[in-house]
Image 1: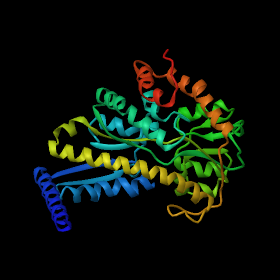
Image 2: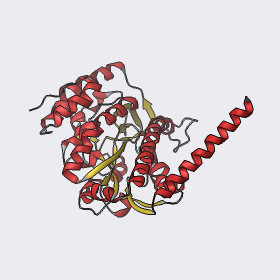
Image 3: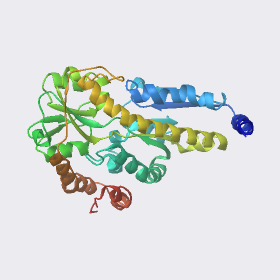
Image 4: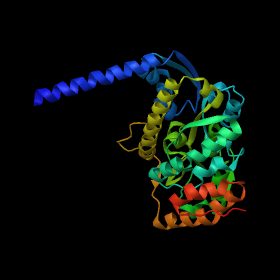
Length: 352
């Protein structure tokens, strides 16, 4: 019996190998050019770059090759990526949805401030709204959505003590997008717009009191040198959307498209899992704990979230953040949100 099982297992491996070879043979030689997200962060270094430069080539038996360059190394701003994709200048590209929020309020929909207090909720929200994004970007930009994934949890880094959300009153906070600014303002703070690379000197010189970024992103950027406290409440996840110009996509052979869709879906799953791990690592590294392996051990104070603040978060979401967003999201935007994300988080937005 054991010998038979070994034989069957071997036969299965052979068939799998033959199937892989067949897929590779069906795919013609294809060279791709990709624009990635922030090149200095772990998501690019650990996932995007090796995926495009190594993994797909190995898995396609050399049929598919790709070059990838992060947008910041090309002298581009994140807000330009999808516009350049619409023009056909970029084929495959990634950027943070919050960076293109000014183009259309739908880009804020999956990451409204405080919407997803944990990574499991963030994934459900993202998956539910992905079809809405795909329809919107196809019609307006000629772009097809291939994947959406997050950075580590976006939290408050402050250059002084913070015990809870009430302490935002009177503080100037680098927010990064409009919905975060509205969240801060709901607690009596002031949202300040600053580029990521301007935050360290701004915190150091007291131009801002706090700034919001990923737990591990802040560690990578050495925010611990100018900030003393982290408030461990995820205010967002800074979702990245990876997409392709529809005309470019349509020209690719069917086996190539099938292969890429499957591999990008796998990449998406891995990045979501990593986001949860990186969130915890960000807390541990910034606090200087021994189990820090992904960053630099610092000496920050990580402040736990009170039950009172969790309740306050839900109240501000329902009474301030979602209504203000809904007021600027026209057309079928609000009904589409209610039919997808609203059902997950238990909030109904009111259309104008």
